[in-house]
Image (cartoon, rainbow, N blue to C red):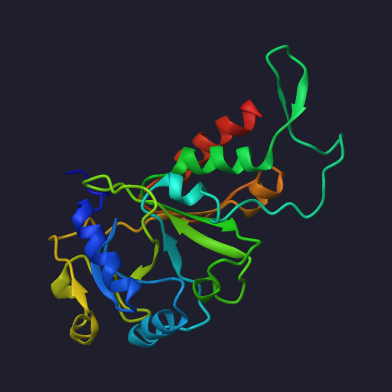
Length: 241
């Protein structure tokens, strides 16, 4: 099995979600290291997670969706459009007849998300509806999202989870269950042990400026996917309009 694939089948995902939906914490094999999962819609669970890790409760937590379709589904993060662009400002692409046309902002961010996910990449997207304030930290209109590759494809529409590494704040990320601090393991309501993880963190990319229409992105952390590969994928989209 490739390194950066979550070794979870649909039954594992269902078990995990059953626990998080009830307010519990799950220790599970994330893409690079072992992670902790809670329900991002439950402020009590997100606070419990921060306390368990000794983490600043105002620091945002990424929301993991089980498919790219779920990331882009109605009711999940979308582009922020503060005002309509003028004809001179609007990004444009060509119609079949060659006539330029404005690029739909939702299509622009959708193509960027599909160019980078699924895989070991986290994206910071605008979430103007502030749908997951408990996970978003001090800026509820922005949200970190992920969509991993799974060992067995989970049906769409599964509840998302808030995900963070299974370590005490500032300590090394654990690549095995045994490396997770004993107090954290004891506090988890479900432990999914799938052996060692590769240990390489995910790459984090900020797409908020891209969503607003200026064609920029920023690699906040380079990890499993090199920054040059991020530039290649998004650069191709920018050239295509």
